[in-house]
Image (cartoon, rainbow, N blue to C red; front, side, top):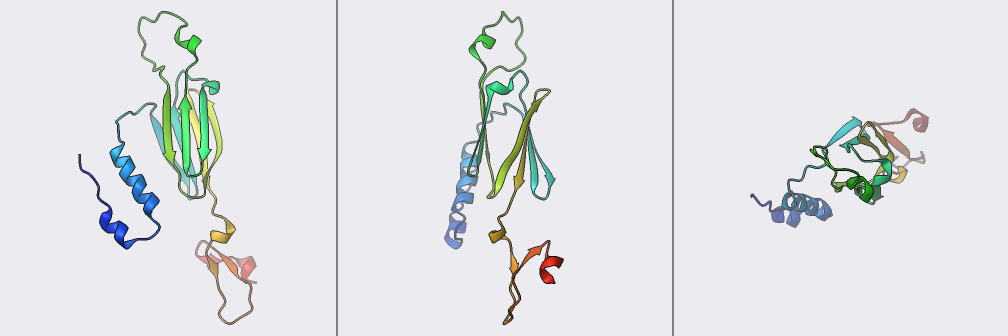
Length: 158
């Protein structure tokens, strides 16, 4: 397996430690477990959707935890469900799972729903007002204005 070495980049960058650690850990920890299968979809410039195929799981058996920059989804089958009968063929996976998704700064979970065996989690990126780029007037007393899509908004310019 090829090992990524970010040492040259670490020497010439400041503040990207988390990104390099994430890339190195992801390259190291690729165990090949693809259960449950999932999709990640970009729905808008600041909107995303994660869809997991969790057939056979009830909403009470799924736990979703959002921490700073980390989304953890766990599924645990109830004991009585696993011992409910004698299967002649078990093709639908019944094992527990844990999926972790690293989230960018300012990305938060907006909603989650379970329907037809699909767990859908909608995410949005909300950059705080203080972090948005602002136009600065040179030598003037004009108020600062938030840049919206590359140009100052009409209301702020007036």
